[in-house]
Image 1 (cartoon, one colour):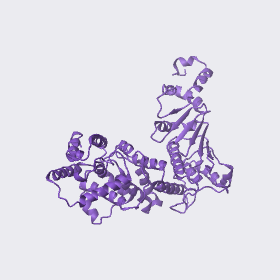
Image 2 (cartoon, helix red, strand yellow):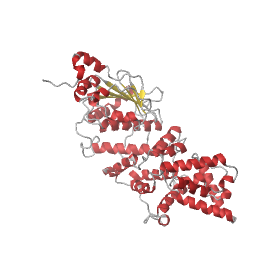
Image 3 (cartoon, helix red, strand yellow):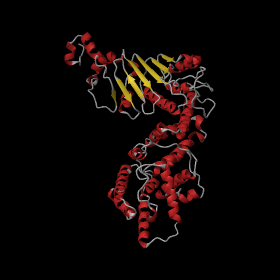
Image 4 (cartoon, one colour):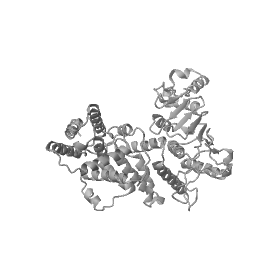
Length: 510
């Protein structure tokens, strides 16, 4: 006798149950990871295995899932099903992103991906598209199989939002390159990540008519996605479509776009740089960003040091701009400036400003060159300030980044002026000196010690960041600066600053 775990549902004919199961498919007009939770109509799938097996075919077998990728940095993916339900996924930290990781894609009738073209010359849009596509591919790589896949390259509504130039040749927004096989055209930048996917039963790449001259490229991409072997197993001797070469091209393009992002002007670029720094580490000091660079550094094509040099230079900027670095805390409090030269307000207290930072160092230089002998009470205060400065440690808080760099991070114009070097070198020396590294200290650095570069440099520097005390430090610093700004009048707030820092740090157990 067949065992049924359907309870009272077994009394209904199979045709009636099928109609009920079809209506379980989501049809809510719009949902996102940030909206209130709605009723879970699919909770029934967790009731028992037999019920799950009966329902699943009706949910997915006729389902076509449409995924739109837009050239907008703050909007990762938009997913829509055939019943009109829409899910907007902002980024990989969105709860919906994790939810879609577990979708049984291979049971779908069709997966359709549409990618809108960036505007001509708009690098930030191309970088956004590349990031979003890579996030989508990472999501699909986690599945245990994929359905028929359609990829549509669409021209955008903007007159310049096209994949091809007026003469029919592909657009290539990024001109810099690292190797002979670096991806050049915009369409390759967004299509190549899909070549990591394998075992797709059928693949169809659809493009605008003015790109049909690239038909052979699209056919090759379709064939690569239909390979049944895992990515990394198809190797050849400098074959353009072998997996090693595909990964090398992907790594080259990733490095190119990250370098472009360092220097791009504009509000969107500023906010993307902020996100890169703000989410560099999680609360436990783990960095997915650095892990990606570590993986690149182990690749056969990445043995030259230039491949990972940039991540070390970028981490220097992270140390420099970190709102809770020891050096930044001193600047925000003007703790190194003598009381007689300290400003009545702290211009760097609540938000970052490069002109204010330069002004701070100019003021600090003037104070240090002042030949006047401090009065006895000022000397006592300066000693207290020095003691307070010695207690500051470089900490980490994503909230602090968001609060302090409200307008994002300006372009990282490397080697542009002495200020860049001074701030970076100062922060590094303080990190080593405070922790009294037995091998590398400030004297060793000044004597010409060569620090590790790239990934190894980052792995060395992260040891000097206190992740456990991040939020306590943020709250203590914020309360102190808020209190000073609320009660300051010319000169009065400078009295007892160092002592106030020490007392507050004691209360917060820092």
